[in-house]
Length: 232
Image (cartoon, rainbow, N blue to C red; front, side):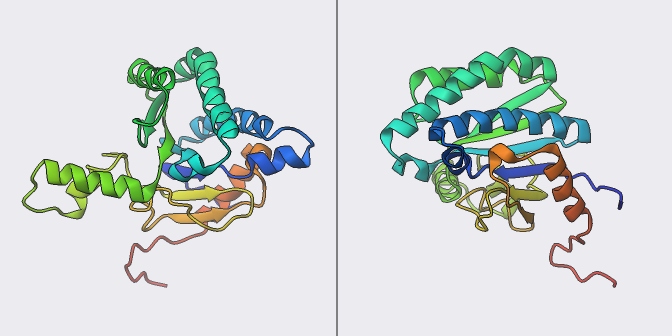
């Protein structure tokens, strides 16, 4: 087997929770609960492999269009799971960051997010970035408005990147999307310019360490050119 090249930053669109649950004859929310467990399992796998950053698309700006009951259950699940697993995540050495809007999120969850960021700020084994109420276009618009407020005389790519939610985090090297879908769904649009893409047929609750390794094997075969011409 070809030696694995480990990406510094992996981003994942965790798709297919509801579909997986429906196929199992379970309520959709059970798919989201299993999806949260898989997110923790993949975080552990990334730590073992030496990945520095893991970005997970948890709730998009468009997800507000889902039925209100499902949205409420999603946020309740997120709040309960993060609260229950906080100590384990700290012990595991996970630094947690959140990106996305915070003005539309309930007070209890917002306080928990701030608490997790504060209490894990010294953790160093991996940085897990949870995108909650996040959209790539919204991220760019908010960055433009921030630049206007700060009265920048001019902007280049580097200075503009630092106004975006990811700030000084390096762009993802590899994006994985599950459930067979082949689109970006408004995730990290600025940051994915040269990211390698891997599409898995597995729904997120079915995703395993073995499937992650398959994605890394595929990534390891690619030659990243970043617009350059490489010698054949």
